[in-house]
Length: 121
Image (cartoon, rainbow, N blue to C red; front, side, top):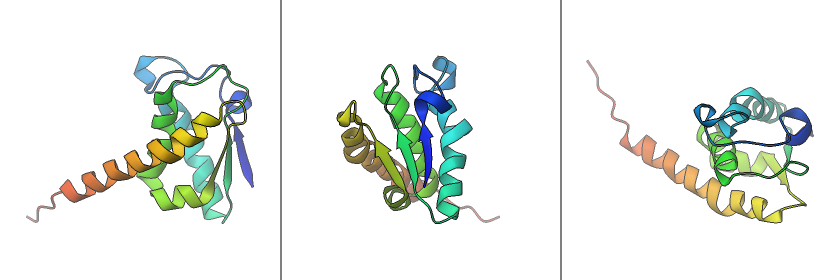
């Protein structure tokens, strides 16, 4: 299994949701590390372990942006089947991801897809 440890592979103090809001954002983490690592693990029939422990903490928006984009790009079931979240220090983050982030982004993705209009010229 592949593994990402945010503390050693990204930063000690994760920041806000978007890059424009400050350093070490969830958006930056997603685009620089998580998307490619998850995609490679998935293509190889592997699971990706995301270890949240060891940092100074998280804003919920950081995790929402990073994990939510996985759902948007890969689909909720693929993420559920192929991502293992570890959070021994703050088990609440794992519950937030499973019970809030994944379902909310799945709903957002479904609403977007249902509202896309295709125009033939």
